[in-house]
Length: 329
Image 1: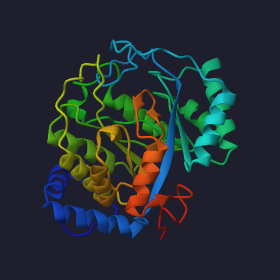
Image 2 (image 1 turned 120 degrees about the vertical axis):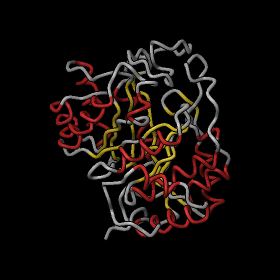
Image 3 (image 1 turned 180 degrees about the vertical axis):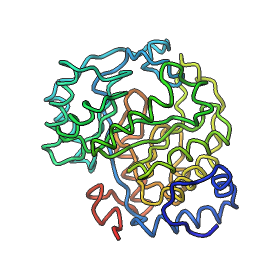
Image 4 (image 1 turned 90 degrees about the horizontal axis):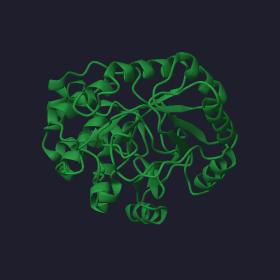
């Protein structure tokens, strides 16, 4: 395949043909697209914090925070504003340009809880960091209030293809997720939207997920690609682990389909070798979640990430959207 312009009309067959190219050709095409829009040495660094943990009513089969899964997770109510700001400032000093905050909810409810979220967003925004939230489903009014408070980006993953979705989640529909994304987009907040690879889905389901992401107009600003963390007590704890090269192929295909999006290595990095992560960077990944934990699952520590990037001759972007990370035309 030749280098494509920005498109929003990818077919499953085109995505499959891209993915199934000989590995050197696939990586070359992905790297060509990557270099057209980004500095290939720069990695955007985000930090994710759980500000309300556990007790979620959703039945997501992968999630330790679901009340339907007996994982022994200890529930925690909201972290005070001052503590969140302290953690955000620490993340900023360590090189993160985006601070993401997650609350284990099916849907945001108006009242004191949402007011607390808005206060946190305002406080972190004053630090000069990009503020990202992942709070479940939103109404249009709630999305607008988050924007007014200083929320830069909203994470709401599609998880998998529409066809496989019902095998993973039954308490929320695919249309519910798309509706929330539409509300967020209409409010003028950036979209962070990706999925999870390795939940027992078929390769065609992975193509279906990428199609849903790549045919959004505009493309999501950031696309987190998670490798399933198999947590004891969840229905997916014994699912077969994905082949590392299949995961790299997904990263490369995502880069080709969404050339200007940040493609983020998210959950599952503790099970990736340094060599696998390096291949992902070559394939077009240019963002990571940093810190010891991602919400409730383990994540490589800062020292390990710093050492790896140093070995690769790469560095953290100074700003999510400055010219050290992205080449604006």
